Length: 191
Image (cartoon, rainbow, N blue to C red; front, side, top):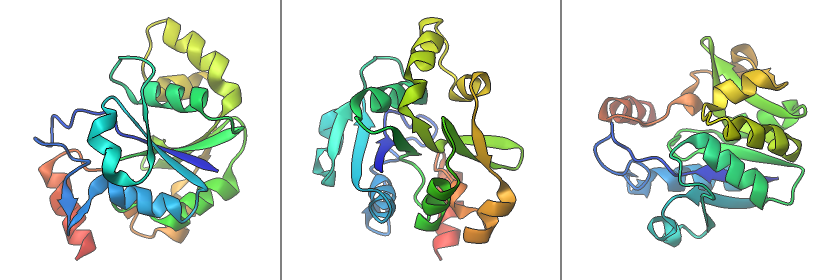
């Protein structure tokens, strides 16, 4: 399965580029790439600025639309990939575990499967079918950019918190790094 790591954000709340921020000498996005490589056959980074990520050892694809939203990264990935289904990951998940990605693959059902925990969907840890592309295009033509909003309009499956805790007891895979406070919590988990 191909994995597309979304790297189009601006890191406003973090105060500097969070994906290039080094945690114990390793860039945040590199940590995500390393985990994805354990499970997926091919890894891509989807970004607004291809040059910024060219030294990661993976192919970098430029977003096909100028809009700043994760749904644009999903749209780009679905358009680019010849595969029937693809994995989507956010680039700011430095603690993502390969066991979580394996569980996602095992639990996948058409046309989309995402994680669900603490009452909310986690659409940036998911598997999406290419068959969603026409519905996604129609949704975006209406000017809509919410990935959760899109999922609510199509059929999707969730991997629930109980199942997730079997492979990631403290749910550290869900910890994204939006602020320096998030970084502190992540550092505590790393030890």
